[in-house]
Each structure stands twice: as structure tokens, then as C-alpha cells.
Amino acid sequence: MDQRRPPSWQFILTLLMFGYMYLPILVLGVFSFNASPYSAGWSGFTLSWYGRFFNDSKILAALQDSLFVAFISVVISAILGTTMAVGLAKYRFPGKGLYRGVSYLPLIVPDIAIAVATLVFLAFMGIPLSIWTVVAAHVVFCLAYIALVVSTRLAGLNPHLEEAALDLGATPAQAFIKVLLPQLMPAIVSGCLLAFVLSMDDFLISSFTAGGGVTTLPMEIYSRVRTGVKPDVNALSVFLIGVSGGLAFLAEFIRHRGEQRRLGG
Amino acid sequence: MSASTTPTSATEDPPRSRVGIGQRLLRLVQPLVLLFPAGVWLALLLVIPTLMILELSLHPGQRPGAAITPYGLGNYLQIFQPTYLQVMWRSFYFAIVTTVICVLLGFPVAYWIAVMAPKKWQNLLLVCFVLPLWTSSLLRSYAWITILRPTGVINSFLGLFGIPQQDLLYQDLSVLIGMSYNFLPYMVLILYASLEKLDKRLLEAAADLGANPQQAFRKITIPQTLPGVAAGSFLVFITSIGDFVVPELLGGASSMTTARLIYNQFLGATRNWGFGSGLSMLLILAVSISIALLLKYGDRDPDLL
Image (cartoon, rainbow over all chains, first blue to last red; front, side, top):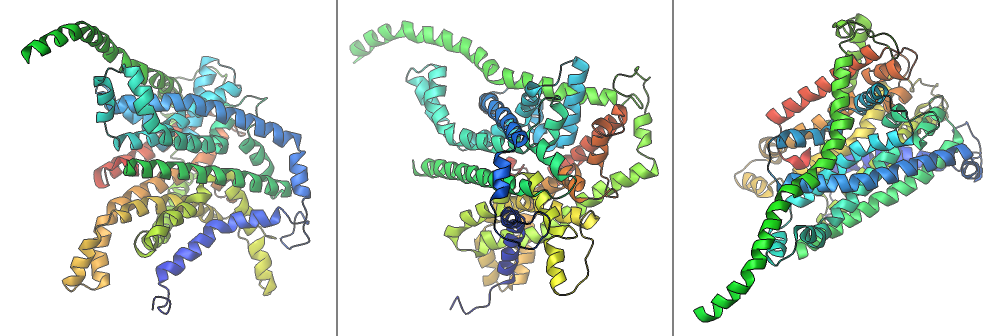
């Protein structure tokens, strides 16, 4: 009976929107195998763009810079963001509203304004731009996203478990590490994956805080594509989309499993 | 009974009080340990820099390395020149139109996934819909160049039917396509959260009481999901008003926006840090006003922010 009913317009629109979402990704995928560099027509299958991209030392150096920045920023942010979220959930203190408000700012203030402010700050302080200034700036937004994911999870936790641990003689540090941290782990991991992807994707803040010798992947991509279509970028895109799509699914899977376990236990 | 409890309490008392003192000390230290590092980081790299550009914006025409110009509102007055007013207006226009497009396209999608789709598929459908968000925004905009350019996918397709080449790229239209593409997943995500919470018994009650589906939708679904619509619109609005990548890559020289103008003041040809800071403060102000509006009229659910 269900199959005979004509599909609803909402269904058709949803289908179209799925098409809209995946069309650009599909196009990049198809063209990364297209022999002709500039025409939109199909002129034969090739893997040469992939070969070129894997031998492109500038791209590989940029990938290395990006991975370095993302990795270090995420590690620092995981610690700072988690402790901040726990601290904000546990304690009341004067100025807490302000603190919380500031911690949300990186999620709300446009990247360009943050980038400009950081550049001005570094310039006035006379701090030379380097890969470490990029890391310092990335930590700001990474920690905000990790704290957001962690505090959402904290809100749904049973606070009595940690109290029970304390009553049973655990020190606060033990209670934190043995009781609270394992419960927060799924949120921390999915927050880290999100922050990692955002850091890898960031163009503006990196361009404003990177010194001469540092080029992150988005900066390299930007300098290539602003003048038009570059076929080797297609291959790079497919590679990156594959990696970040995989990370996205992993993050979602971990979050989902964490939630199931929480509901089950 | 009392004989058995007294000795145990006597032996347990001393360690308990020691733990008590230690805990009291820790109770003071712990918040500091948890909150101080992140607080310092945010203060140093977010709060102080923002205050610095506020100060810098009060030095008209300040350039890097140049002598400090006296205080004045010149940077803010410069914004009122017709060219710059037009730039501000264009940013606002892109953001508003993108928001409206995202509500109009996003609501039916979120509605279908949250209300009409089979229950067990809902999560997967949502994840798949927002999956493109995880890919680089630069690359997604770049993909639209491939599609819209004069020899791109759409024009080649139109060419098959003998339709002459259309100028699709580097227009306001291409910016709007790119922006709504980039921000539609956020809207669907937030509307889905809102529609999922919708109390479906109310809809059944309305139907029992003789309301037709349109009436039920108007009187129940819309009012109940309005906070979600407000939150989603807010999010799309603030992300698109400050967006740089899409207007830069998909817009032409005529689609100058505030973010592009700011970029030019710092990394582009014109090195006017004072004016750039003024523009940045204006952007922050615009975003703050939208937050104030959201907090006043929207959903206070922190999940949605």
C-alpha cells in the first residue's frame, strides 16, 4: 500500500537536496580521473593527477605543516578544553558567566575577526610569526569546540558516580581519572576529531598567523585555485574528502556508541 | 551495638579528618587547576587581541610600522562612504538571502528526516546529509567553480541542448549558491533537533479534534519549532555574514564583502590596519546584536548554540 502512494513532495525535495549536497563532491571525484585537464567533457580515464599530487613536494610539505598544526593543537586543546568544561560544570565562582561567554566566542565571532585580532596582538607583542603562532591560534577555536562537545556530554552524566568514588576514599584526582574521564572519553574523542578536521580546514586564521616559511594545506590550495581550476587539486580533494569523511563517520560512530552505552548502563 | 560502633569510629576518625583537610585544600586548588590554563589561553589569544583591535580601530588610518595616529573615529566614519556602505549592505544581503534559502530548503528536509522517514534510518540519513560539512570548505567552493565556470559542468550540459554559454561564475548568484550549499547542513542539523523533540501526540490530538494536516502544521508544528528556526537562522546568518572563502572564490570583483575588505586591509594591497580593525569591530557588533536577538526571542537550549 505504501509503495503505491505517490512520494510526498518533502521526500522528493530531500532527495534533490541530497543531490545538491553530493553533486560537487561527485564532480570533483569524476574529474580527478579525467584525462583532459581543462574541459568539462570526459576524455578518458587517468591516474596521472594522483601521481602528480603524490609527487608534488609543495603539497606534501603543506600537508605536513597542516598535520603538525592540527595534531599539536588538538592535543593541547583536548587537555585545556576538557578541564575547562569540567571546571565550568562543577564550580560556581564570580565571573563564571563571563568566562563561559568568552569560551563560546570562538564559535560565534567570524574567523576573519579572530584572525585579524590575533595578527595585531602578535605584531604588537613583537612575537615573530611561525608554525607555533599558528598552533597557538588554532588552540583557541579547537578548545572551544572540544569544550562544547564535552560539556554537552557532562550535562547528561550522573554526578553521583564521582561523589560515590570520593565517598569510597578516592582522591579527587583518582575520581577524575578513573570515574569521570572514562565516561567523558567518547565526547573527548569525537570533539578532538571535530577539532582536528576544523584545524585542517582552517584557511583564514592560518594565513594571518603563519610566518613566511609555513604554508598549511588550505593556504596552498587557496593559492592554486583562486586563479581557476587546477586538475591536480581534484585528486587532492578526493584524497582529503575521503580522509575527512572517514574521520566524520568514526566520530559519529564513537559518539553514537557512547550514547548507547550510557542509555544501556 | 554501641560497643561495636565506638571502636571503629575511633580508628577511622583520624584518617578521615586528614582526608578532610586535604580535600578542603584540593577544593580550592582544583578549580584553579581546571580553569586557569584554558582561561589564560583565551585571555591572551582572544580577549586581549580583541581589545587591541578595538583600540586600534580608534586610530584613523593606522598602518603597520607607521607612527601612531591620534585617536579619532575616522575609521568608523570611513565606513559611511557610499562604496563601503555598499560592501556592508552586500554582506548583509548575502547573509539574509542565504538564511532564507536555508530555512526554505532545510525545513522540508529536516521535516522529512525527523517526522516522515522510517525511525531506524533517521540517524543515518542525518549523518549522511551533514557529512559534506566535514570536508574542506575551500574544496567545496572550488568544486562549485568546476561546476559553474564557463566551460564547466552546467554549461557543457546546457551546450548539449544548444543553449549558449551562461555567465554563472563570479556573480552574486554563484556566491548565494555556494553559501547556501555550505550552510544548509547546519540548518538541517538544528531544525532536525527541534523537530525531533516535537510532541507528536499534539498532532494526533489536533487531528482527533478535527484539524486538517495544514491547520495542525500551522498551529502546532510551526510554533513548536520556531525556536529551532530562530537558532538555525542565527547560526547561518552569523557564519555567512563573516564568510570569506565563498565570496572570494565564487564572487567576482563586484561581490566585495566585509570579510574580503578586511582581508585586503591586512594581507592585500591596502595596508590600513586601523580601518580593517574598525570593520572587524563592526562585524563583531553585528554578530553580537544577532546573539542578543536570539537570546531574547529564541530557544535558550544551549545544545542548539
